[in-house]
Length: 314
Length: 257
Ligand SMILES: Nc1ncnc2c1ncn2[C@@H]1O[C@H](COP(=O)(O)OP(=O)(O)OP(=O)(O)O)[C@@H](O)[C@H]1O
Ligand SMILES: [Mg+2]
Image (cartoon, rainbow over all chains, first blue to last red; front, side):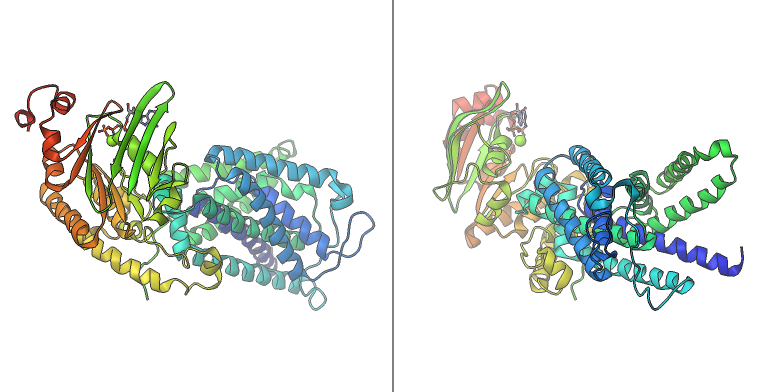
């Protein structure tokens, strides 16, 4: 590979890495601060991706829309719709114990997936939606466009990080962590557990939706294959646990490290003989699993563990 | 202030409290005593809203709060401590106290995201109160420690601190003395007394150490096996034959002290 090729490999890596960082920060809001076990990340991601795709792509005969709206509008509506889905789920499930919430969220993500595959008028079914634009497409093309996009993604990572960080250090975030640590005691000091948990589930869902929409713009084409739970839900969870649940920087670091391993293992499995090729995804999962084992043996709370925010008031 | 009105509590077939009634008068310190398993903690859980009784009502200032969710009772001015410490383990000791203060502006998610300066005043106040409370409880040196790492006695102190931070009207103390050293326990008694006499706080405390109860309490309620055994002044209770039997299996209290 030439230096140029290497550089653009890195740009592509950082683009997907950034999208995963947003997912991982969003999961950190739900699990790291709130102790809410969301096993249906792929569902919110899909809602966001399809919302963005349908709103911003050019008119198509094969599905509803597209509406050719600006990308920013698509991103905002993607966040809102995904947040609404989060609100509906939280209304019903937040009261449940962690394991039930996990089951309920898997179930709902599967329902969303079935809708995406079967409601062809809306999503064009398994054929997917094509012609999804990228920001400033008319001004830049080719490799410049790749650069513009990676900057765009990382601006959104920065926004997500800022929100996550503000939430974490605020009195709101402190209540959230108290509920996570001991809900009975939190109720006894007057905190409305259901309200706080619903709120954190919704913000997490909003950013998962935005990450979904971003990936739709990146791929320019979005089909149900991209919402594979293994690629979305499972990887995001590994990223957060390895990086350090509860710590926003840990969430970003975890996303980049795990995405690096995932990408490198692809190079390795590409070298495998063809009869192994069909199994390559599972071999990569195995490697990721081994890495997680290694991290958790050495660093029990992840690579960048949670620590209480500085409390000296200004 | 609080009326515990003909309350029964059943867990499956087991009757933890059987048709008990007693009052916790405002401005006083009431003791709640009885042998292990008498139903004392269960009574607290009912008053604080963590359990809904099988029968009967809890009245707060004559208002029926039997089914009011526990988190709403704090606004009435009710706070409690837990017999088994319920600390927020992955938060610092200082945060454990600060979170107990009320700060509606800072606890709004929209303010947290868009207007992080809101609630700074309340935050400042909470910080100062928390530092003061830490000093009083003699655990200032632990302020940055994770609460999970505290010793059993230190966690009990944190429980007390959290109750004080809420500036409540009534504090329910469940065996606050268990595991706390005697000198500090004496100081805590002084503090309880002072909060009661000068700030008008109402207290209800569960305690096994009768000397401690005698020192603080205006009146005592005795439970045994879910039944209300008697209510009265400390002296009346100490010398009551039924209490002596239930509590000490016969003989005089002094023989066992
Ligand atoms: N959630 C519960 N489920 C089932 N049984 C319970 C529950 N809570 C309390 N009990 C039972 O109710 C009875 C009274 O318990 P409680 O904790 O109120 O006693 P206590 O008077 O506080 O005792 P101690 O002095 O040992 O703290 C006990 O027999 C206990 O096993
Ligand atoms: Mg008890």
